[in-house]
Amino acid sequence: MLEFTMEHKVTDVTLYRSALEYLKVINITQKSEESCPQTPFCFIAALTTELALKAFLINRGVTENTSRKIGHNLVRAWSKSVELGLKVDPEVPRWCDLLNGAYDRPFLARYAKTNTGIVSSPQHELHEALNNLVSTVGDQLGLDLNGNFV
Image 1: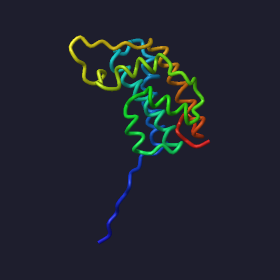
Image 2: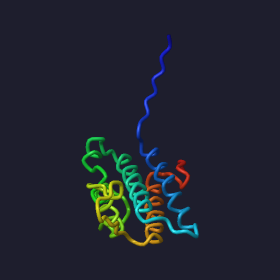
Image 3: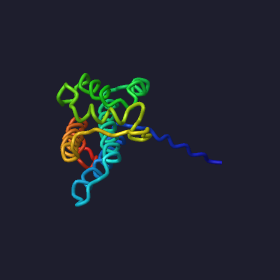
């Protein structure tokens, strides 16, 4: 009997392509006449940020163990990416820090507690910042905005 085993690995390309998919959601919300609710918008924005930064980190040889230590902390992921050569402002931007407050422990964007309010930059600013971040990461990975090698 013939057995097939397929290993499904997380790679810089798979993470970048996932970041692009979530970025499309962000872009669609900005074209809508109806505003997106704040909490889901921030969650998707944070996930896009995490995926883009982790794509860069994996590309630069960060191990799975180090990635786990970074966890969902966007500030740590940003700082480590800068340390490894990501061409962005070395200072963690306010929008990223604010997203981190809802996205990292205690995961308020996922598991709201009594009287939880999500504070973030305006959605149009996050839209612009995320498009810039994902584009910058793609340029440094040699991938276009469709996730294809250039």
